[in-house]
Every structure is written in structure tokens, then in C-alpha cells.
Image (cartoon, rainbow, N blue to C red; front, side, top):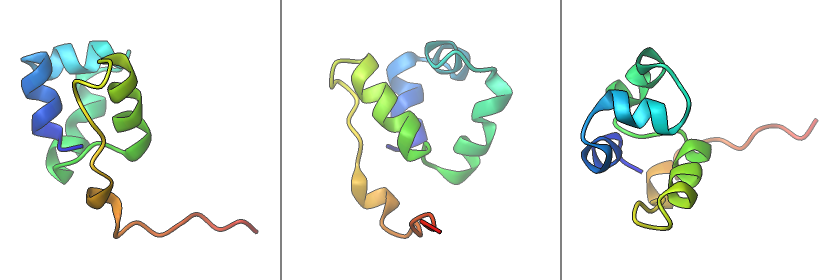
Length: 68
């Protein structure tokens, strides 16, 4: 999910942070990266009842965590 899409939905960075029970500072790296972490994107999809949707293509470059 693009960070700007989430900010546009909530109108402000502060409102987005409140929706996720975070500080505004916690979302600053997402603004710089241009996307939310995948888990937070999934959380917002649930919170908004699907009005915001996870775009898995934004996460294709992520390396899976090691199982070891």
C-alpha cells in the first residue's frame, strides 16, 4: 500500500498514525519509503473494511525472513 494512499484516506499523517495507534514519528520512514510495511497495510485493509487495499506488487523485492 502506498503511504500517500493511506494518508489521503485519513486526510492527515496524524490521523493515519492514530488509526494504527502509533505516533506521527513512527510513520515518517513509511513516507520516505513511499509504502507501508506489509503487515500495517494488511491491518489498514481490515480496519477500513477493504476501502484501502494491499498491493502485493509493492513488496515483491522483499527477501523472506530466514526460517533458521
